[in-house]
Length: 157
Image (cartoon, rainbow, N blue to C red):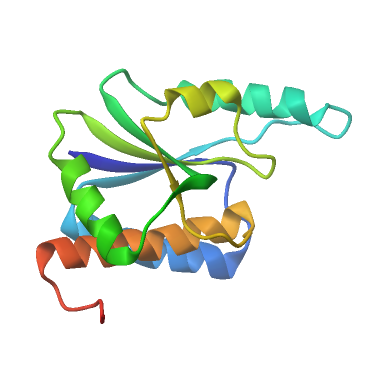
């Protein structure tokens, strides 16, 4: 099963982009992996946030297939330790699905339609991070749990 990170908008901070590229390369050596970046909406200055979230949600959903297992990264999602996440990921990877799609929404979150499409919701922390920083934190955790699953030394308990 291929793992996909579906994210809203490009990463603008160079130090974050650099870290993501590093972990993307590492992850790609362990499993099929792809990052899909949905272009941000233009001319949103006078657009109500609710309309922006709705439109972004439609764009995100266009990148999800019926045979995908979707995990939404969300502050109200399930909170797991790293070992627990590795165990859950191992179960997800055994599902008869085409892709495992992790979604990171935009600055204002995701629409109700994206919430409804998610098969699972995962929280990285009780703390609040920028949606761009979450990308890097997620990538490191994904790499970490894949090394646990594959028995590669990286994680220290």
